[in-house]
Amino acid sequence: MARKKNISVCVIGAGLIGKERLMSLRQLIKKGRKVEIAGIFDPYAPNKDEIAKEFNTKFFDSLDALFAGCPDWIFIATPHDDAVEIAKKALAKGFKVLVEKPLGRSYKEAKSVFDCTTKKNQLWVGFNYRFFDGIAAALKDIRQKKFGDLISLNILMGHGGNPKDKLGWKLDPVKAGGGCLIDPGVHLLDICQLIAKGKLEVMCGMPWKGFWKTGIEEETNLLLRFGKTAINFQVSIVKWASTFRMEINGTKKYGIVTGRNRSYGDQKYIIGEKWGWMKGGSQKDSEKEVLTSANTDSFTKEIEALLFGNQTKNSIKPCSGEEALAVMELLDRCRKILKLPV
Image (cartoon, rainbow, N blue to C red; front, side, top):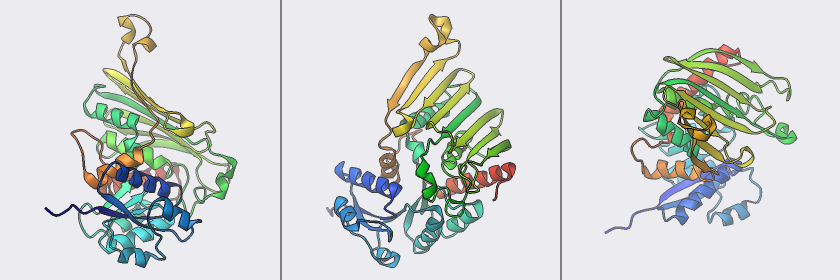
């Protein structure tokens, strides 16, 4: 019997998220998964020799050289503006591509990337929040109707940030493509789309800016709805205290997911019964902790699901190109309500 070939992956971009992807691939190799890091391309990376040694691979001198190596997958982890053209080139050549969120800086740009696909299931987008343990468990419970009919969802995320943020590209309206609504906001929009299972209506909203003075929105508040369910949505990069909180309110139960990882604290997911206090004690005493997780392996879980498809019923799946395009269409509708550039 022929020995099964390793899945070869090249990574474009060796910055913060590129290294997360590289570490996750290495973790899968340690687990015995048939995958290999076939090379890295990043003309701006310092200490290329050290990085290559750390991940037992090599750096390519150009995109053409990387393409010539014919990897099975190309992972793109670059600033948003660079990712668009790189993804188009890789897709046009027939490679399977995972590009970090968002898929472009606008729906129009995302559509131009999607239109470069040459086959089904060729394009995927990195939304690793789907694979945070608390979020994934809550999404499964929603699908299984554990909360009853959904009344409302409150979802809040705020980056604490630091004074050096202005030196990076994420506050640049051209390179990033906008402010907090596109990053990290698309993560939350993706979660809302998964819950709504279809087109969300954008009711109203209000942006705020003025601290960093780069022209981007720095905090956004939105009201969304699907059917009879309301979604109160807030994302901020001027929150100062790193915060993540998702509250699910249903006719039978409620669920609360707090934290994310690192400065946000571990992610905790609790479920409370309707009128739980009637069983004795306080309502707080009636709540049950489903899990607490440091969420250190969300990238690994996402890549493993992408490459090996080891999915069980109701499990969370990676974000397809079609789903990411729908998120970008929702993003543009939110921008119009907020009177932000589209």
